[in-house]
Length: 262
Image (cartoon, rainbow, N blue to C red; front, side, top):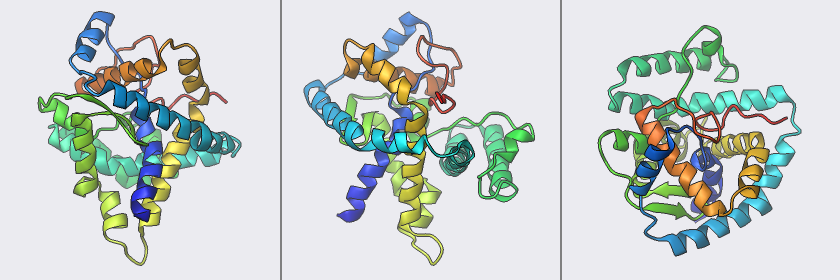
C-alpha cells in the first residue's frame, strides 16, 4: 500500500508533462480532432480534476516555488538527468513506430550523456550537434498504430488522460520502462525503488517550477479551466502522434520544458 500511495503522489509530477502541452494545427482541424474524443465521464472527471487542483495548490505548487530558488545549474542538471532517463522509454517507442534512425540517434544520446555527461547531468550530445530530443511514449505508439483515444479521462492524482493513454501508462509500468524495471521491480544493492520515485518527483518538480506563471495564466484567463486543460491535452496528444511542429495560440513547446520564467 505504501508503494502504491508513493507512486500515485510522485506520478502526478511525471504526468504533468502532458497535462497542458502545446503543439498544434489550424483551428478547424484542432476541433475536428478534439471532437473525436468524447468526455464520456465528464461529471466524474470534473470532480477528479477539482481534487487534483486542490492537491496541486496545497502540495505540489509550494514545493515547486521552493525549488525555483535553487541555483540555475542545479535545476538545469536535474532536468538533463531526467531527460536522459526518459530515453529508456523513448528509444523502444522509436523502434515500435519504425523510426529506426531516430532510435539510433537517441541510443547515441543516451550513451554519450550517461558517460561523458556524467549520468546525464550535462547534455553533451546536444553540444556535439545531435538533433533535438523528442520524447515518445506507449500511448503515442498506440496512436500511430491506429488505436483511437477512446473516452477522455481525468485520473486521480495522475491527471488528464484517455483510455488509450492510460493503457500506454500501464504498459510503461508493466515492463516498458527499463528504469522502472531495474529499480522498483528488481531492487539491487545499487538501485532501489526509492531511486525511481525520486527521479519521477524531481522531473515533475522541475517541470512545475518552470511553468508556475504559465499555469497561473491559463487558469486566470480560462472561463472554464477544466475545458481548457482538456482541450490542450487532446490537441497536444494528436500533435505528438502526428509529429507535427505547427504552433497553436498557446505555447510553442511540446512539453513546456523550455519555458523558464525566472
